[in-house]
Image (tube, rainbow, N blue to C red; front, side, top):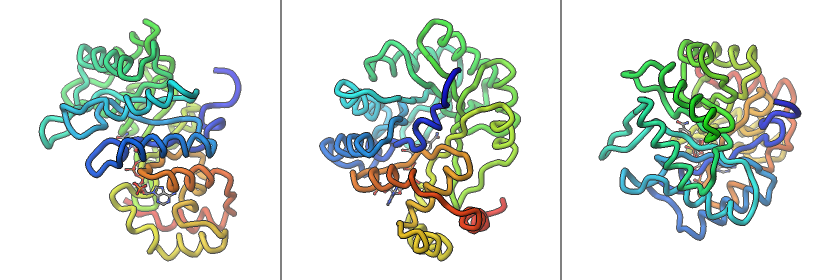
Length: 276
Ligand SMILES: NC(=O)c1ccc[n+]([C@@H]2O[C@H](COP(=O)([O-])OP(=O)(O)OC[C@H]3O[C@@H](n4cnc5c(N)ncnc54)[C@H](OP(=O)(O)O)[C@@H]3O)[C@@H](O)[C@H]2O)c1
């Protein structure tokens, strides 16, 4: 691929899980949140077929994104390989299922090809080579432009790379959740974009405003502790996938892409991250 990577062009990605799941905002606020992120310079939106209220509400987030994409251009990443079964989130990685999921997401998004398509999670019953192998065939069929894997450990990533040109990895990381250093090292060595999801801690985000180091760094910079986290992830060379269910939070995370942390500030936030 020539030119700057998608991470360099779009340092912050807006995630749409909270626009679609339990406690989601009104449709009007959800659409306004996506527009606010785009207006503030976000150029990439993350979604998944499973983001909705349950198995009967699959593709809800993808349809929201499609509605905005009819009006303006941006990169969309989506994912397949996880489905809801009642309360459970089931990992499904067999090739036939993934082909159907990928095609269904194309329909929901109203496009002929996915800009970026992730294997959402590894199905323990299916070798990862078989799952990503089907994504390679979908790419060869012109249904996917770039391939990604999510929620992988270093061994799974290496096995996927042996059979598929993976360009993006999306794993969880925040000041409260440690990223696997081996995954990070593999991404760096192979020139793979490393997206970190739930950078504010996801369900732990209530801790952000009370964390003393984050408060101190934020105060030094004159920004919010949430914005300090976004800046920290970018300083680490990651591409944060930030959740928001209201426009002001989407704008705040987008704005944070312009904040430069000193090495000491990066090290201070690094030191909060649990070792295990
Ligand atoms: N690959 C995967 O398996 C996977 C798993 C989970 C998530 N994801 C992706 O990651 C995205 C983000 O995850 P997440 O939403 O769970 O966690 P998050 O990014 O850590 O956000 C958690 C909460 O923090 C608040 N927040 C975010 N930015 C803020 C800001 N600048 N100022 C103040 N508050 C802010 C938001 O509250 P409000 O909602 O009130 O705005 C948000 O709900 C998802 O939308 C999804 O796209 C991927």
